Image (cartoon, rainbow, N blue to C red; front, side, top):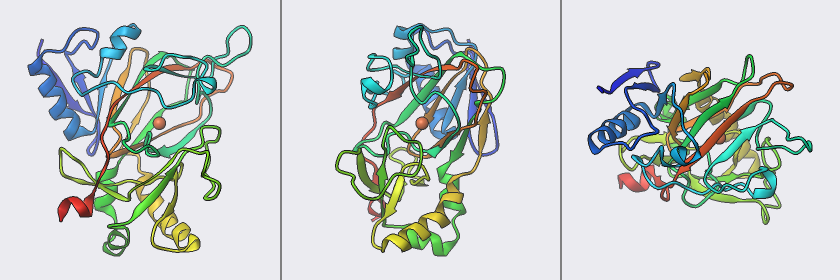
Length: 282
Ligand SMILES: [Fe+2]
């Protein structure tokens, strides 16, 4: 079957037709998917039907599957490669998944780890009657859109990426000892495309180096709006599978009715340490 690549917007995302991810992907198709993924940052596959084992192999064309970082006691499931993103409670009133309800601010997945996962995929199992769209922002575009003075301010800096799994709000700058955190380049160079991408977000970026706490807050406040762009908003349908590049995109979730069930399955592909844009260019 011929593979079709249909862009979803001017700046990001493409729908792939003619690929059944439940089946092994041949080398020629894998090459087409890789090229499309690097070009469009996010790929959408509709009408997919996969069991957990097929899901675990669904991104083999891209790399090795990664393990779920969230502690087992906070996500209601002990599968180390598939995480349930859900608001559903079991018969005993215990959540079957995690991160299940409400809206979620723009963020890069796993930016608080030394070698963040390069890709995340989501696969829909159950949906509410409305809401819960996922918005995606292209961080190459975010970087390119910075005015020259802000670009100069941010180049060569590092940002402190922090995530406390118990909260969904801006993390505290202090008392990081028991909270996953990592300093990352504020601007990364993509290892394949070579393009520069802004790598900070309101959910996880607590500080920028080389300035006082007040200056850091002020600079980040100026930078966040550039990241929070909706290049593509995905309205989920049953059978949808979406896979995106975490090094050059952010995502956020819109709210949905709290009393309706929503279940997605999520997995990731291993990544390497990030390259700082300035160091890579030197
Ligand atoms: Fe996420």
